[in-house]
Every structure is written in structure tokens, then in C-alpha cells.
Length: 506
Picture 1 (cartoon, one colour):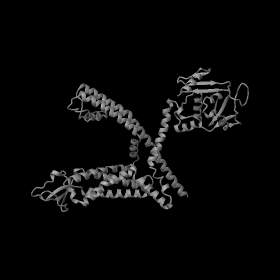
Picture 2 (tube, rainbow, N blue to C red):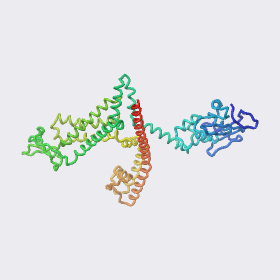
Picture 3 (tube, rainbow, N blue to C red):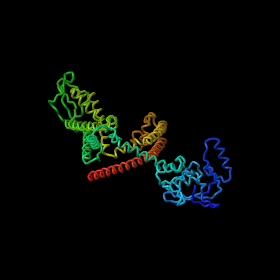
Picture 4 (cartoon, one colour):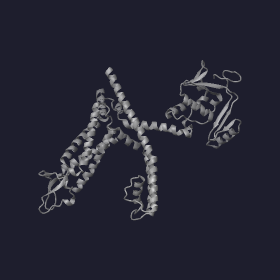
């Protein structure tokens, strides 16, 4: 092996007669005994962390490296401080030797090479905080070092880089849903025109940034979502109270619904079962029903959402994958209450004055609220908020555990020091503890003794600390995801413009 060196004998390619070794923490008795013997040898040094560094050399020969344009010079003995390092492999070095320059050239990152040399000198692997973790891992693997050797003081920065990259990669997979990539699988055996049309229609329905037409369709979809929600809310307001007259027998049983007389009476309260009691002279009862205007709005929204769901199903690259996706299930559940109500009322019109049945239908209507999640396709911020909660599940579990421990402690203490007429049991005290620790404070339960005030104060302070420790993690995750998605959307928009320009030039 040749190199540019200087030594006492003046040889151009000296053979190294050095022996260097770094002894770390050993896991078995043989290695421990070997470490003790090494520590007793001349030239051995023991670091503060208990690592034994032994360098014994009969030569002061140096070697020159050119890494990415930066020159490094060190002793040959330093290269052999770690036998597993590639710098101690003569075959590896010989491939990069430049005879005309008399050095070893590597087209690698000089900052990481400096880290490797310092590790060979000191036995401790420290990393600069400004270099990305995945880049560090690749460079260390090239030089024959494992990332497990990184010191604890630098591990947090390294791990945060890798965790961030992994989280953003997962975000991209979930954001795109991998459905667009499935066209390559399902496109086999199909004509290119049909495949291209399906892809464009699928993007039109699901990606508001695909074209101007998709933006208009997305806006229309948002309008229908708000109309559906407004109709659901208005149906509970007294302004939209609407009643129809139902003929009854003398015993109070319903004969049939009638369209002879409708009346809008916003001043009348909704009828209950006790109100539907005919007298001897009563032939009709007024039963609350859906306002005609709201019914028209609901039917129009039902038709739109049904057509939209069917269109997505027909253009989906993988039908089963689409049907079992979360958003598809939510859309389907939001459609079911309207269809159930429509079918039941048309099959049995007399069910309108059946209080139990109508209450059940009213409960089913609550599922309509799920339509608000329809906005996720058109409002990235809403999707990122939900995704942040999903990705931060571990932090949320930890927050919940902290809150439950606090609730148990403070509710138990309050039960034993306060009046039993207010804090009747420890489980009832959980409510007070939760409201106090979250600084809501409804005032329905409160302490009335000196010890109770003290416990309540500690409960409020501990709640502030718990939320203060956990909430910043969620905020940081949200900011990271939101920034990445905004950048990704900008890149996708720019890529579409580039493709359009290329198509025009062709």
C-alpha cells in the first residue's frame, strides 16, 4: 500500500507496526478480563466513561485523505484504532489511492469523515446537529460504522431526523391513499383511452387541485354539505315546526295520514305521546312532520351525494379497496338514514304518529353529521388536524393516563375531606377532578373547606402542567404535517403546469 508519508527510515510505503484498540463496555467475563489486561499495558488510557483506548506504535507515519475536496491528514495508527472500520482495510483503501497526488480520494461528505476520524481518535461518535439523520446513517454505513455507536448526547437529534422522515413518508402514503398508483395494476388489459378517462375522472372527483372544473365541483360539493347540515340543524328549531292532521278513531288509533289540511304553526310546541289523546269531539290530531322546504333540500342533497358516491365507486381503480376505505364508509353511513326514513315512511305512512318509531328515525338522522367529514377532501387543514390526532395516538394515550391518575388521586382526597352531600362518591368526584384539571370549572361541584381549597388548587396546577407537557407535542406535529402538505400541494401544482407546457410544445 502506497501513500504520502513521512517517517524516520524515509521509505515511501512503510508497513505499519502499530497496534491500537478501543475497549468499550463488555457483556461477558472474557471481554472484561481482556479489558483489564489492556488497561495494564503501557500507553493505555481510560476515559471518563470507562472506555479503554490503547495505542501502541513504533512509527509516526501519516496518511493524507481528500474527502469531497477537503484534505485530512492523520497517523496510520489512528486508522487501526477500530479494526472493523473500512479505513483499517488496506484493500478498500487501495481502490481509492491516487499515485499522482499521493493521497486517498473519496467523493463523500467531509463533515461526516471528520466525525469518523474523531471516533477513531477518541472512541466516541459525536455528530453535528445540522446534518440530516438519514444522510448520516448512509455515510456511517459506508465507512463501516453502525449508528448504534452514536453517543447519547447526539442520539436525540439523530433520532428526531429519522422519526420526522418516517412520519412524513407515512403522511404522503396516507394522503394519496395509494389509490392513484393502483391504476397501473388495474390498467392491464384495458385500452389506453378508457384507462386515461378513468384516471382523469377519478382525479376530477377526488382532487380539487386537478383542474378548474374539479375546483368548481369541489365548491359545489361543499355547498351541498353545508345545505345538508343546515337542514339538519333547522329541523330542530321552532321556526321550522310543521304539523299535519291525522284522523283517529274514538279509541285514539290512527286511521291514515291525510293531505287535506296542512298547517305551519311555529308557535305550537312539538307534540308528545301524551298530547295525542283525542276527546269525544276530536277527529284529527296534529302530528309534527318535516317542513316541506327542508324535505326538498334533503332530497336534493340525497340525490347529489348518491350520484357522487356511485361515480367514485365506478371510477375507483380498486373497487373493494375503495368500499372499505374510511372515507367511503363515512359517506355510505351518512346516506343510510335518509334512505331508511324515505323507505319506511313511504311503506307505512301511518308511522308518522308513532312516537317511538319517529324518535328512532330522529336518532338515525344524527348520523348525517358525518357529512361534515366530506370536507376533508377539500380542506387540507381539517384532514391534517384529524391525521395529527391519529399520528399522535401515543402522546394522547399518555395524556389520558396522566389525567386518569390525577382524577383518581384528587377525587379520592376530595371525597374524604368534603361534604358527602356534594361529593357523594369517588366516581362522582371524577367529574369535578376532570373539569378542574382542564380549567373548565362549571361550578356545579366545588370545595367548601380549607383542605378542599388546597386539594382543588393542586388539582388545577397539575392539570395545567399535564396539558402544558402534552399539547406542544400535538402542536409541533400539526405544524410539521401542515407545512409539508402545503409544500407537497405546491409541488404537485407546479408539476401539473410543467406537464401542460410540455404537452403544448409537443
